[in-house]
Image (cartoon, rainbow, N blue to C red; front, side, top):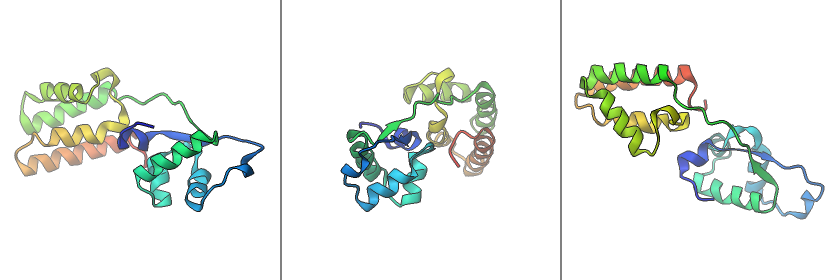
Amino acid sequence: MDFSSSELSAMVFKRVVRQDIEEFPLDPQMLSVFMELDGKTPLGRVAQKTGLTMSSMRELIAKLMQNGLVQKVVQGIAALDKDFFDYLVVHLSLAVGPIAQVLIEEEVASLGYKLSQFPGHRVAELIDNLAREIRREEKKDAFLKAMAIKIREKKYLPT
């Protein structure tokens, strides 16, 4: 599996029911991860619950997939909506002025997306990168607080 940690942490896997599961040796770590895969919980949350790093999680999931014990749940990726981007433009404009829209468009493009298709699970990275453009600390803090509230309201990140 060749995914960035942010992509992997947002992925969801589910257990595959097999009659021959006892034929596959599962060490305690692998078993604890296997039991947490419910088809709803993102791997980032599973890693937190099990105390594993994302690199360990990547290896365990690869082994489980290779043995046909888990499969990736295909979900529609929640994209940031127009309301969120309007809010983002307003709050970034308060901090940097009228160049805010251009900064947002450039940052979204540099992350490899279009505004209409920017995935919600990468919103924290987008906000952090945009916050680096804000020179005055008090304006940066106000921007980050406002965006944190909106992100929680929109439920773009797993809780």
